[in-house]
Image 1 (cartoon, rainbow, N blue to C red):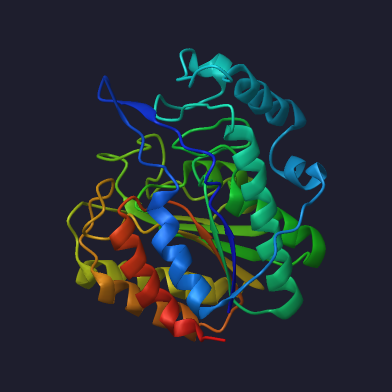
Image 2: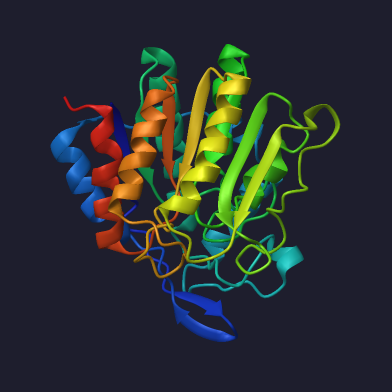
Length: 319
Protein backbone atom coordinates (compact mmCIF):
# COMPACT_ATOMS: atom_id res chain seq x y z
CA UNK A 1 0.00 0.00 0.00
CA UNK A 2 1.10 3.56 -0.79
CA UNK A 3 -0.30 6.95 0.08
CA UNK A 4 -0.52 10.50 -1.22
CA UNK A 5 -0.74 13.45 1.14
CA UNK A 6 -1.90 17.00 0.48
CA UNK A 7 -3.17 18.67 3.66
CA UNK A 8 -2.93 22.21 2.27
CA UNK A 9 -1.65 23.64 5.55
CA UNK A 10 -2.01 27.18 4.16
CA UNK A 11 -5.78 26.75 3.76
CA UNK A 12 -7.48 27.42 7.11
CA UNK A 13 -11.14 28.46 6.95
CA UNK A 14 -12.27 29.92 10.27
CA UNK A 15 -16.02 30.51 10.04
CA UNK A 16 -19.31 28.84 9.31
CA UNK A 17 -22.94 29.48 10.17
CA UNK A 18 -24.60 26.67 12.12
CA UNK A 19 -28.17 26.99 13.40
CA UNK A 20 -28.05 30.73 12.81
CA UNK A 21 -24.82 31.26 14.72
CA UNK A 22 -21.30 31.95 13.46
CA UNK A 23 -19.11 29.14 14.80
CA UNK A 24 -15.55 27.88 14.33
CA UNK A 25 -15.00 25.90 11.14
CA UNK A 26 -13.66 22.38 11.90
CA UNK A 27 -12.25 21.65 8.42
CA UNK A 28 -8.68 22.60 9.33
CA UNK A 29 -5.28 20.94 8.69
CA UNK A 30 -4.77 19.76 12.27
CA UNK A 31 -7.64 17.28 11.98
CA UNK A 32 -5.46 15.04 9.80
CA UNK A 33 -1.90 15.82 10.90
CA UNK A 34 -1.64 12.82 13.25
CA UNK A 35 -2.94 10.56 10.48
CA UNK A 36 -0.21 11.89 8.17
CA UNK A 37 2.53 11.19 10.75
CA UNK A 38 1.28 7.64 11.15
CA UNK A 39 1.12 7.02 7.41
CA UNK A 40 4.57 8.49 6.79
CA UNK A 41 6.06 6.19 9.39
CA UNK A 42 4.48 3.04 7.96
CA UNK A 43 3.86 3.41 4.22
CA UNK A 44 5.51 4.74 1.08
CA UNK A 45 4.52 8.31 0.20
CA UNK A 46 4.10 9.14 -3.49
CA UNK A 47 5.16 12.51 -4.94
CA UNK A 48 2.19 14.50 -6.24
CA UNK A 49 1.96 15.16 -9.95
CA UNK A 50 0.11 17.96 -11.73
CA UNK A 51 -2.57 17.16 -14.30
CA UNK A 52 -4.27 19.14 -17.09
CA UNK A 53 -7.48 20.89 -16.09
CA UNK A 54 -9.23 18.92 -18.85
CA UNK A 55 -9.49 16.07 -16.34
CA UNK A 56 -11.20 18.44 -13.92
CA UNK A 57 -13.70 19.32 -16.64
CA UNK A 58 -14.75 15.66 -16.85
CA UNK A 59 -16.80 16.40 -13.72
CA UNK A 60 -17.01 20.18 -13.34
CA UNK A 61 -17.82 22.56 -16.22
CA UNK A 62 -15.18 25.15 -17.01
CA UNK A 63 -17.44 28.05 -16.01
CA UNK A 64 -17.88 26.55 -12.53
CA UNK A 65 -14.14 26.09 -12.06
CA UNK A 66 -13.52 29.68 -13.11
CA UNK A 67 -16.33 30.83 -10.82
CA UNK A 68 -14.67 29.21 -7.78
CA UNK A 69 -11.37 30.78 -8.76
CA UNK A 70 -13.01 34.20 -8.90
CA UNK A 71 -14.68 33.71 -5.50
CA UNK A 72 -11.27 32.91 -4.03
CA UNK A 73 -9.63 35.92 -5.63
CA UNK A 74 -12.40 38.17 -4.31
CA UNK A 75 -11.83 36.85 -0.78
CA UNK A 76 -8.31 38.29 -0.63
CA UNK A 77 -9.13 40.73 2.16
CA UNK A 78 -11.76 38.78 4.07
CA UNK A 79 -13.24 35.32 4.44
CA UNK A 80 -16.50 35.13 2.50
CA UNK A 81 -19.60 33.32 3.73
CA UNK A 82 -22.17 32.68 0.96
CA UNK A 83 -25.11 35.05 0.87
CA UNK A 84 -27.03 34.17 -2.30
CA UNK A 85 -26.79 30.42 -2.78
CA UNK A 86 -27.85 30.23 -6.43
CA UNK A 87 -25.49 33.05 -7.41
CA UNK A 88 -22.60 31.88 -5.27
CA UNK A 89 -23.11 28.22 -6.30
CA UNK A 90 -22.62 27.11 -2.70
CA UNK A 91 -25.16 24.78 -1.13
CA UNK A 92 -24.90 25.95 2.47
CA UNK A 93 -23.60 28.59 4.85
CA UNK A 94 -20.93 26.30 6.27
CA UNK A 95 -18.62 26.51 3.27
CA UNK A 96 -16.74 29.83 3.31
CA UNK A 97 -14.23 31.02 0.74
CA UNK A 98 -10.75 32.27 1.54
CA UNK A 99 -8.10 33.56 -0.81
CA UNK A 100 -6.57 30.06 -0.73
CA UNK A 101 -9.69 27.95 -1.32
CA UNK A 102 -9.21 27.51 -5.06
CA UNK A 103 -5.53 26.62 -4.73
CA UNK A 104 -6.33 24.04 -2.05
CA UNK A 105 -9.09 22.47 -4.15
CA UNK A 106 -6.79 22.25 -7.19
CA UNK A 107 -4.07 20.66 -5.06
CA UNK A 108 -6.58 18.08 -3.83
CA UNK A 109 -7.45 17.36 -7.47
CA UNK A 110 -3.75 16.76 -8.23
CA UNK A 111 -3.36 14.48 -5.21
CA UNK A 112 -6.46 12.50 -6.13
CA UNK A 113 -5.36 11.84 -9.70
CA UNK A 114 -1.89 10.93 -8.50
CA UNK A 115 -3.46 8.23 -6.37
CA UNK A 116 -5.79 7.11 -9.15
CA UNK A 117 -2.91 6.77 -11.60
CA UNK A 118 -0.96 4.68 -9.11
CA UNK A 119 -3.90 2.31 -8.59
CA UNK A 120 -4.15 1.82 -12.35
CA UNK A 121 -0.42 1.28 -12.68
CA UNK A 122 0.11 -1.26 -9.90
CA UNK A 123 -3.43 -2.51 -9.14
CA UNK A 124 -2.79 -2.09 -5.41
CA UNK A 125 -4.37 -0.03 -2.63
CA UNK A 126 -3.60 3.68 -2.40
CA UNK A 127 -4.78 6.20 0.20
CA UNK A 128 -5.25 9.85 -0.77
CA UNK A 129 -4.98 11.82 2.46
CA UNK A 130 -6.19 15.21 1.39
CA UNK A 131 -8.38 18.18 2.19
CA UNK A 132 -10.66 19.90 1.39
CA UNK A 133 -13.01 16.92 1.09
CA UNK A 134 -15.17 16.42 -1.98
CA UNK A 135 -18.28 14.24 -1.78
CA UNK A 136 -20.77 17.08 -1.15
CA UNK A 137 -19.68 18.93 -4.30
CA UNK A 138 -21.94 18.34 -7.29
CA UNK A 139 -20.85 19.15 -10.83
CA UNK A 140 -21.74 22.83 -10.40
CA UNK A 141 -22.37 23.44 -6.69
CA UNK A 142 -19.99 23.55 -3.71
CA UNK A 143 -21.11 22.72 -0.19
CA UNK A 144 -20.32 20.83 3.00
CA UNK A 145 -16.69 22.08 2.96
CA UNK A 146 -16.36 20.60 -0.56
CA UNK A 147 -15.49 22.39 -3.83
CA UNK A 148 -14.34 19.77 -6.35
CA UNK A 149 -15.57 16.20 -6.00
CA UNK A 150 -12.39 14.18 -5.53
CA UNK A 151 -14.01 10.74 -5.66
CA UNK A 152 -15.94 11.60 -8.82
CA UNK A 153 -12.80 13.00 -10.44
CA UNK A 154 -10.96 9.76 -9.67
CA UNK A 155 -13.79 7.67 -11.08
CA UNK A 156 -14.04 9.71 -14.28
CA UNK A 157 -10.27 9.66 -14.75
CA UNK A 158 -9.99 5.91 -14.22
CA UNK A 159 -12.96 5.15 -16.47
CA UNK A 160 -11.56 7.36 -19.24
CA UNK A 161 -8.55 5.06 -19.34
CA UNK A 162 -9.84 1.54 -18.69
CA UNK A 163 -13.50 1.85 -19.81
CA UNK A 164 -14.54 -0.66 -17.16
CA UNK A 165 -17.08 -0.42 -14.36
CA UNK A 166 -16.08 1.37 -11.15
CA UNK A 167 -17.71 1.43 -7.74
CA UNK A 168 -17.70 4.21 -5.14
CA UNK A 169 -18.38 3.17 -1.54
CA UNK A 170 -19.09 6.22 0.63
CA UNK A 171 -18.43 5.60 4.33
CA UNK A 172 -18.63 9.18 5.56
CA UNK A 173 -21.31 9.82 8.19
CA UNK A 174 -22.99 12.31 5.85
CA UNK A 175 -24.51 11.29 2.54
CA UNK A 176 -22.42 12.17 -0.51
CA UNK A 177 -25.14 14.13 -2.27
CA UNK A 178 -22.67 15.51 -4.80
CA UNK A 179 -21.26 12.14 -5.81
CA UNK A 180 -24.74 10.66 -6.14
CA UNK A 181 -25.94 13.49 -8.36
CA UNK A 182 -22.92 13.23 -10.67
CA UNK A 183 -23.44 9.52 -11.34
CA UNK A 184 -27.21 9.22 -10.93
CA UNK A 185 -27.67 8.56 -14.67
CA UNK A 186 -24.29 6.95 -15.32
CA UNK A 187 -24.40 3.12 -15.39
CA UNK A 188 -20.60 2.87 -15.44
CA UNK A 189 -20.16 4.01 -11.84
CA UNK A 190 -21.96 2.25 -8.99
CA UNK A 191 -22.57 4.44 -5.95
CA UNK A 192 -23.17 2.97 -2.48
CA UNK A 193 -23.51 5.08 0.64
CA UNK A 194 -23.90 4.19 4.34
CA UNK A 195 -24.78 7.32 6.29
CA UNK A 196 -26.88 9.05 8.91
CA UNK A 197 -30.45 9.36 7.71
CA UNK A 198 -31.17 12.62 5.85
CA UNK A 199 -34.37 12.84 7.87
CA UNK A 200 -32.15 14.01 10.73
CA UNK A 201 -28.72 14.90 9.36
CA UNK A 202 -26.91 16.98 6.72
CA UNK A 203 -27.28 17.25 3.75
CA UNK A 204 -31.02 16.52 4.30
CA UNK A 205 -31.78 16.76 0.56
CA UNK A 206 -30.64 13.27 -0.51
CA UNK A 207 -29.63 9.85 0.70
CA UNK A 208 -33.02 8.14 0.93
CA UNK A 209 -33.48 4.46 0.09
CA UNK A 210 -35.75 5.12 -2.87
CA UNK A 211 -33.01 7.01 -4.75
CA UNK A 212 -31.87 4.16 -6.98
CA UNK A 213 -30.55 5.80 -10.14
CA UNK A 214 -32.25 6.91 -13.33
CA UNK A 215 -32.45 5.86 -16.97
CA UNK A 216 -29.74 3.41 -17.94
CA UNK A 217 -28.34 3.76 -14.41
CA UNK A 218 -31.51 2.56 -12.73
CA UNK A 219 -30.49 0.10 -10.03
CA UNK A 220 -26.90 1.35 -9.70
CA UNK A 221 -27.41 3.78 -6.79
CA UNK A 222 -27.72 2.36 -3.27
CA UNK A 223 -28.40 4.28 -0.07
CA UNK A 224 -28.35 2.86 3.44
CA UNK A 225 -29.62 5.63 5.74
CA UNK A 226 -29.23 4.81 9.44
CA UNK A 227 -30.42 6.34 12.67
CA UNK A 228 -27.90 7.84 15.08
CA UNK A 229 -26.07 6.08 17.93
CA UNK A 230 -25.70 2.74 16.17
CA UNK A 231 -22.81 0.45 17.08
CA UNK A 232 -20.77 -1.96 14.97
CA UNK A 233 -23.39 -4.66 15.52
CA UNK A 234 -25.98 -2.70 13.50
CA UNK A 235 -23.46 -1.15 11.10
CA UNK A 236 -21.90 -4.50 10.15
CA UNK A 237 -25.21 -5.83 8.80
CA UNK A 238 -25.48 -2.94 6.34
CA UNK A 239 -21.77 -2.94 5.55
CA UNK A 240 -21.94 -6.61 4.54
CA UNK A 241 -24.88 -5.81 2.24
CA UNK A 242 -22.76 -3.11 0.60
CA UNK A 243 -19.96 -5.61 0.05
CA UNK A 244 -22.41 -8.05 -1.53
CA UNK A 245 -23.44 -5.34 -4.00
CA UNK A 246 -19.82 -4.60 -4.82
CA UNK A 247 -19.05 -8.26 -5.47
CA UNK A 248 -22.20 -8.60 -7.60
CA UNK A 249 -21.16 -5.75 -9.91
CA UNK A 250 -17.49 -6.83 -9.84
CA UNK A 251 -15.89 -3.42 -10.51
CA UNK A 252 -12.32 -3.12 -11.74
CA UNK A 253 -11.57 -0.50 -9.08
CA UNK A 254 -13.25 0.38 -5.79
CA UNK A 255 -13.09 3.98 -4.63
CA UNK A 256 -13.81 4.51 -0.94
CA UNK A 257 -14.92 7.96 0.20
CA UNK A 258 -13.44 7.58 3.65
CA UNK A 259 -14.99 9.55 6.48
CA UNK A 260 -13.78 9.05 10.03
CA UNK A 261 -16.76 11.02 11.33
CA UNK A 262 -18.52 7.70 12.01
CA UNK A 263 -16.21 7.31 15.03
CA UNK A 264 -17.97 7.56 18.39
CA UNK A 265 -15.80 10.54 19.43
CA UNK A 266 -16.37 12.65 16.33
CA UNK A 267 -18.17 15.95 17.02
CA UNK A 268 -19.88 16.07 13.59
CA UNK A 269 -21.15 12.49 13.32
CA UNK A 270 -23.63 10.51 15.39
CA UNK A 271 -22.62 6.87 15.11
CA UNK A 272 -20.92 4.89 17.88
CA UNK A 273 -18.19 3.04 15.97
CA UNK A 274 -15.07 2.37 18.03
CA UNK A 275 -11.49 1.66 16.93
CA UNK A 276 -12.15 -2.04 16.43
CA UNK A 277 -15.02 -1.21 14.07
CA UNK A 278 -12.48 0.34 11.71
CA UNK A 279 -10.29 -2.73 12.06
CA UNK A 280 -13.20 -4.90 10.91
CA UNK A 281 -13.96 -2.52 8.03
CA UNK A 282 -10.35 -2.78 6.89
CA UNK A 283 -10.34 -6.56 7.12
CA UNK A 284 -13.53 -6.90 5.10
CA UNK A 285 -12.37 -4.48 2.40
CA UNK A 286 -9.01 -6.22 2.15
CA UNK A 287 -10.70 -9.58 1.67
CA UNK A 288 -12.76 -8.57 -1.38
CA UNK A 289 -9.49 -8.51 -3.36
CA UNK A 290 -10.27 -5.49 -5.56
CA UNK A 291 -7.81 -2.58 -6.03
CA UNK A 292 -8.93 0.20 -3.67
CA UNK A 293 -8.43 3.94 -3.83
CA UNK A 294 -9.22 5.49 -0.45
CA UNK A 295 -9.97 9.22 -0.59
CA UNK A 296 -10.28 11.20 2.61
CA UNK A 297 -13.56 12.95 3.33
CA UNK A 298 -14.73 13.94 6.85
CA UNK A 299 -13.43 13.28 10.33
CA UNK A 300 -13.09 16.18 12.75
CA UNK A 301 -11.55 14.78 15.94
CA UNK A 302 -7.81 14.52 15.36
CA UNK A 303 -7.32 11.77 17.93
CA UNK A 304 -10.28 9.72 16.71
CA UNK A 305 -9.07 10.09 13.11
CA UNK A 306 -5.63 8.87 14.13
CA UNK A 307 -6.85 5.78 15.99
CA UNK A 308 -9.34 4.92 13.23
CA UNK A 309 -6.64 5.16 10.55
CA UNK A 310 -4.27 2.92 12.49
CA UNK A 311 -6.89 0.21 12.88
CA UNK A 312 -8.17 0.41 9.31
CA UNK A 313 -4.87 0.51 7.46
CA UNK A 314 -3.02 -2.08 9.51
CA UNK A 315 -4.78 -4.59 7.29
CA UNK A 316 -3.10 -3.38 4.11
CA UNK A 317 0.52 -4.24 4.71
CA UNK A 318 3.61 -2.17 5.38
CA UNK A 319 6.72 -1.43 3.40
